[in-house]
Length: 77
Image 1 (cartoon, one colour):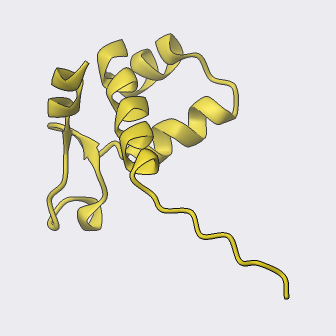
Image 2 (cartoon, rainbow, N blue to C red):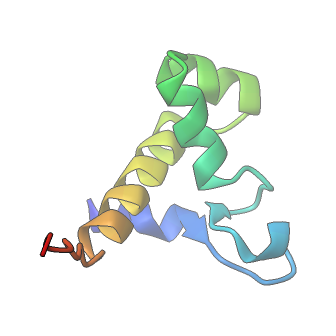
């Protein structure tokens, strides 16, 4: 699964440094947003001329980033 992450690249000169599918200007966040709206991965791949593995890579990247987040819960006093 980790080889999927090679499909994601970050370059400050491409899309202001947002993570994108390698060789494209398609950002991880747009793929996630489109999935959330109900579009199927196959439709995304076809419409954006990327592969299903690229869509999976975007999901894996997002999961890895969110998995590293530290959640701080403020206590009520």
